Image (cartoon, rainbow, N blue to C red; front, side):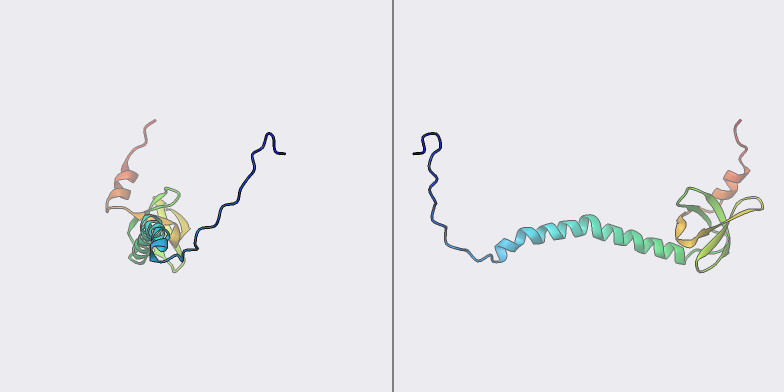
Amino acid sequence: MSFLISDAFAQTAPAAQQPGFEGMLFPLGILVFFYFLFIRPQSKRTKEQKQMLAALNKGAEVVTTGGILGKVAELDDNFVKLEVSENSFIQVQRHAIANMMPKGTYKALSNKKPKV
């Protein structure tokens, strides 16, 4: 009766195979790949950030995550008071410090006259 559609015939199912160690190699390989590509570098960056914040002291020259350059005037457990220009201070959260700059960076940039 099937003039335009061919009949579908069921095939016998192959013998069921138990997935062994060979079946787990590919998923384990993907997990190892993602660990070394994403998880490990992020944890290294987090560890370095914590060490940098622990080593933060008065007089250090830092850059915040917002790009503000300043010199540490006071430290607290949660906040840092930065001198951003002569007698101008701002307070930022401690974890907002992105990088420590080499000594003399703040002074060299604060003595520079702006171009008009």
